[in-house]
Image (cartoon, rainbow, N blue to C red; front, top):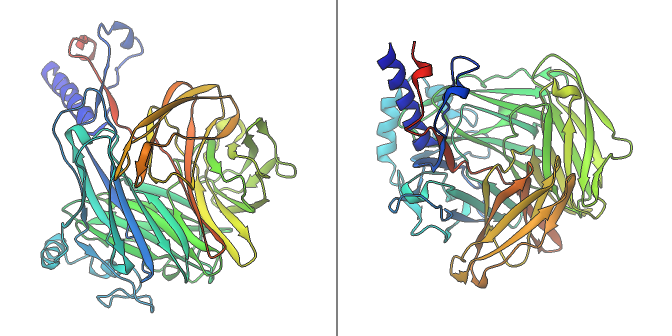
Length: 525
């Protein structure tokens, strides 16, 4: 029994070094006090990222960017490669994919055909596994461009010196049509559950849930939709098969006959794992990506609402049966304030609630802080933000974010049009911000900033000296906190304020691994 226990501990330690997600628990409350060693913090050795298919518009212009910060203690060798997903269903105007299957999830009708056929089909695809972007050295971002509707979803892995903090981003500009504007999304890791408050099945919206499978076996996914009165009846939302190393866009309006302005999407993976993101396209106000909300919690932070936002719409959902009255505060440059008329918001259990908060920020940087009484009822949330007036408005989404525990990076920044917004809702914090070398030249620059408790600051981020191309901004928490951050990219095209906002989650590039000298005898039976 002792040998088995020690083997399990060794296996968990090795897993932590590879993935960054592992924990070893002591069997009794006093075990921690009997340890003689300390946990070492080491760079992860391998990681993966998934980027959804950027656009179905022939007018789309997409830039992919990849970057890994220089990490002390990392291996001196390694690779970081993003490749085109093997198979991608291209939706037609009539709501069918190119293979003629009904709906956006034609693969659902093939779910009994097995993984073997999916792998054979992938081998026939000339684009299967085609390298799109490969890093050459840590500390310097690289880019690739693709035009039109043929830009692929990407599947990537990084190991060795590139694994710790590896980040990728895709930014797409669509000049006209449904969803016109600037659309940006950070590529994300595969997982088994996602929440997306703020989606829609309304006639004015064309919302897709993009599912990307990085593995060599098929993934099976359920999609649940929740509206203002509870769960919506869906037709083909269960048992959707995503083929190996492929991407599948699912049009939400094909899953239900109910047309609702505000919908919460819950993605649950029955087998395998996927990356997931919602692409929300509007006929009048452009469009953007809606990343997944942070896990359901009794305390949420939605960082970096643009100071010139003309309309802010909050969408919230609680997965349980209990109702909750959310306390709403705005972290402004001067501190936490309560918006007049929106002191508390009532959310019914299992029902999606939406609230128009108007021009909430009133010309100042701001972040929303939502709190359930005693933190007892978990909630997910996101805001839809509009900039501009009349027929020249553009939209973006900010979900509840995870804190920057150690380090996070935003890509595709330019000397003008980039805003880095940082909030410390619970305590004073100190952060270090590093501007990397540019994609085509430039010298890294670093600055340190103090963020006062309860405030949001749009900081004047450093820019590489002699910048050519775009660059990465890496935020590190040095003291205090917790810290939440987001980055806004903005430009003006034809009088329309194009913009996109990406929260900066921690890159999880470091992992605590128990020291070899640690006394493990307390785990023996």
